[in-house]
Length: 501
Image (cartoon, rainbow, N blue to C red; front, side, top):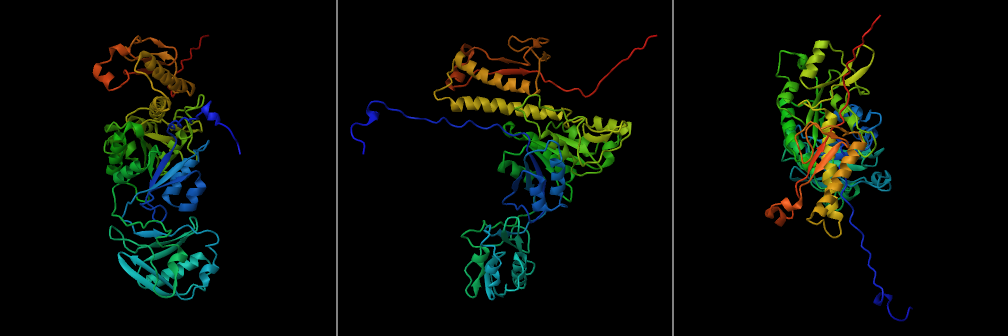
């Protein structure tokens, strides 16, 4: 045992770990919104996938969600993350999911030893006690579920019991739909071998019961998913019954109005060939354009109802923290999507209506063109602008959050903020989003129209002495103005060749 005085009486040392800075948002995450029942319920709403394999395990290879995910993950390089969400396009059934069973709990012998099983469970609010369930002949866990379902359906017609081999759990589903549809926790059975604990459907470890809900509008589902997660950035719908044009327009308006701190974009695949008709303005592409939606893009494809997912999938591969990584959508490929063969007139209508197409060119190539949003902005510039906004916002927040003392309300403090903004803009120069060029905007600070932005950006902050007393009392910074020159991209080339003898 140490004796004598504590060293801290003479030398006192404390260690403080600085807080972790806020993370940048990922602008390469897509959300596919589908309505396939039996996979993602309205309580879970959203499921994360890192490969097509995971989507295949859950949805098989024929569901719309899989077909859209296939287009998304077929890019090279491949996107890293995808969300799949659930839209209650029709009224849903109430259900309960048992706990995920361990390998030991999944042993068939646990179930085949039951010859007089009982299950007490409430369906649609009515308690049911099913007895005399014999599981001795079951050959696998699907067989166990089938035997229980047969006994349950004899009392509640249409009720189902399924074994989910992917999640390793049993699920009981009501035969009805809507707000009165429900399945409760299994309770103690009065006689026989109680199957509730064996199936792990009791309140001890089962998931919370999922009540049925009425059919919801597409825009309502999107609003719910926007509230549930700020992670996803781009949204596409993948359903066997396509949404009506009015649904698409409602979602486009919602996406347009969402907070810039959680900015999103929306993509829609158009299969109606009236987009190629110059005599109509009632088609969805024209309505998107009329709405001047800067956060919605569309793609015409008669061959693939989820082609727009492939278009965003290409942008999802961009690493904005890298060097020369930003891309234009034009001239890129859509693996697995058949190219459209169009006349020059039809292609002209595609461009005039600010929609996009994966089109066949006479030289044997197929390309995406023109890669624009509904208002005519280029998709890469829309995504890049959202990234830059988030980068500057996050960096400035982290300056305030991680500074152990304070950012003073002085010119020196404003210089700190200006440096942080400049660092973010420098990353934008490095990744190719902004670049040196002639400033064509208004006069800002010492920057004049037609001045050359040699660094690609200019930041102006007035002296702190010009602040109003009210702003100073509110501890606001001076207003910063950041002028950036977009690097742009070449989509068209004009060449004149003069030959002289």
